[in-house]
Image (cartoon, rainbow, N blue to C red; front, side, top):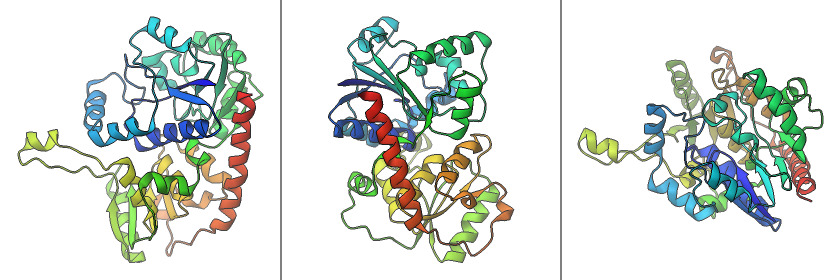
Length: 355
């Protein structure tokens, strides 16, 4: 079956890229032909249409990221307008919307209802796999809510990534038949990511990997404190490298770590400190001891929903002053049993939806 995937294809963020990669590979593995819809006429909701968003996106769009996507993604020809979008979608047997925060109401400002699969044809199987609303509320106008209430009834199957997503679907849109599933990255196991990172023999190093999206002095103090307490070397896995000698040359040569090195730094660490959803996800996948700083600006409910699935609620830190030392080790034998259970439920959902 030819499947079009609607997601953040131009979001140069490790989690966004890896969730799309995992969904593509899972669907290929069960015999389908999935393609990312290459929507090229607007910026993603997270980058927005503003100048800063475009500059950041351009700095991220380096050869390492592009090469990774070229190796692992199949995409449609670039879609430049509504006519070419309709033409591209008409070639698909099914449309999957997801994953990531594509149903965050902030995306509607730039993209309308595109991420909700509003352009799908009646004959196509329309499926939502693990989209996230980002927060515990959905803010838009009554017309769009009423439009979506009608549109959601055209879906063959709807799943979301968080508990709040289930509540929003039920309470805002009146859709009760909705399932909570794993983020696509968790459909694949640790060995898949070790191969992706080029690791043949995993040997953890004495390092504390930290992936912080919104740094501040308090978080930095805890990075220093924990690394000293644990006797580990702190490694910033989101640090750009510069090769130029002049200021302009440095900006032009800005390079963030490759996808492979980002994965490798988490896999080879002994502890992870992060305020990122996918930083938390990969700590679990690689069975690493970790703490997650709550990120209220980006939405704490995403972390709470994820961690509650694995009975790891104690790993989220809302107030950094509440961290107690020493940090306990995580019992991953129990976590892995739960991960296997939720992975089967999530893959069963996709198999049912595509049948």
